[in-house]
Image (cartoon, rainbow, N blue to C red):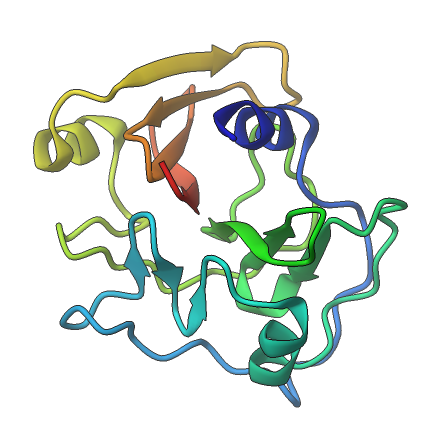
Amino acid sequence: MRLVLVTAIAIGCGHPSTAPTLENHSTPPPAASGNATVIAGKSMGKIELGMTRARVRELLGEPSPQTDPDDSFDQYYPLGLSVAYDDGGLVLALHAFSGTNAGYETEPWAHFDLRTPEGITFDMTEQEVVAKMGPPKRSGALDHAPIPSNWIDYGPIQFDFISSNHHLFHVVVAKE
């Protein structure tokens, strides 16, 4: 599964599209752990790993228009959220965006209100995230991306940073 997530990040998990209006969308409410909106290995907002696509759409509405031919992602640009599905249509991974384009991400992502139980937010640097989370299991760089980036992997949560300033721009939640 880690290969799927790293591949999704390396090739970009979304495709250019026109964002829908915010009319039927709102920022997901905090998850069950305090005021956190992201729980590693479990959820982002009200969307949980293993949930069906139908349930995700019931909670968030229709996704932004798709150009993904294999239909493995639902993009919610106005929410700063992307949902990846397995072959059975269950949530495999959740992607949150800071609203800043970096790495291979060039879509019109809005800012997701990221808060983990550890206190991680999108205004943090790589050094600050590592200080709160400890040493990562794995790390790497996407030096040849349009906007070079670095990533650190803790198993059920992965963080991506812009290489030039080390600011957090993308978070992935998946099962370990």
